[in-house]
Length: 243
Image (cartoon, rainbow, N blue to C red; front, side, top):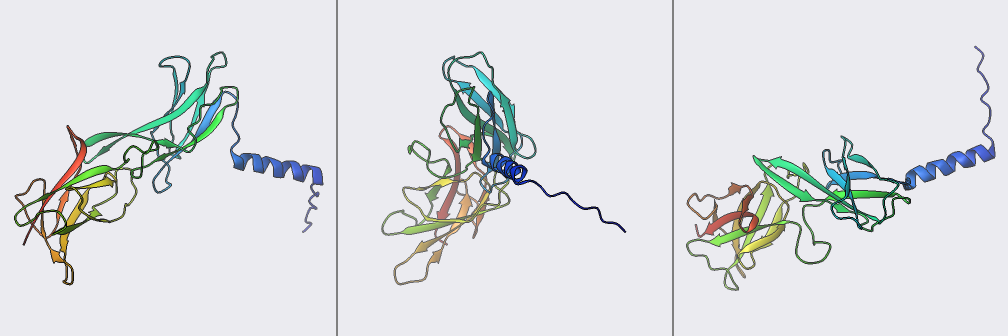
C-alpha cells in the first residue's frame, strides 16, 4: 500500500492558522452584532433567555434575540442609528406551578457602539450581592418562633435548608445553614427546600426543634416548602417550636 505524502504547512500559513485560532478563542466582536452565551449558576447553557441591546439615545428601542439549546444568541444591530447600545437579558421559568422572571447579569455592562459590536456573556445568578451593592439577588426565608422560641442572644436558632430537587435554574444547589437573624434568612437561591432546625447551646449538645411549613400547624422533625409570590416579594415561611 502506498501512503501519500502530506505536504508540509508553510510557516506563514501556520502562523495565520494560529492567529485565527487565537482570534476565535478571544471572542472578538463583529461590527453591528452583539453575540454571546447565557449560562446558569453551574455554568450550564440556558435556553430560551431573552437577550437585548438597548439603544441609549432613543427611548424603548431594543434589538432582541433568544438563546438556543447551547445558550448562544446573536443580535443584529442597525447601521443607521445613533447612540450606543447597553446589554441586558432576562429569563422566565415555570417552577412548581409558578412562573418567575429573572434578570441575568452580564460579564461586561458597558454600552458599546454598533460599529464596534460586542461579545457579552450573561449568567443567571440566584444569589450574591446586587451589582450596585443595594441588597441581594437571592430570596428571603422567614422563620417564625412557635411555642418556647424567642430569637435572640438567649436562643441561637440554627436552620438548615436542603434543596429538595433542582433549583429553578436546573442546578443542584447546596445546603444552607444559618443562625436566624431578625427572624429571617436572606439571599437564598430560589428552589424547593426541606428545613431542619436546632437551638445552639453553650456547653451542651444542640437541641433539635420541630418545624412546620408556613406559620405553624403541621410540625415534624423537618418540613418542606416552596417560595411564593407575595406582597413583600418572593418569600418562603417556616415556623419552629420546642419539641
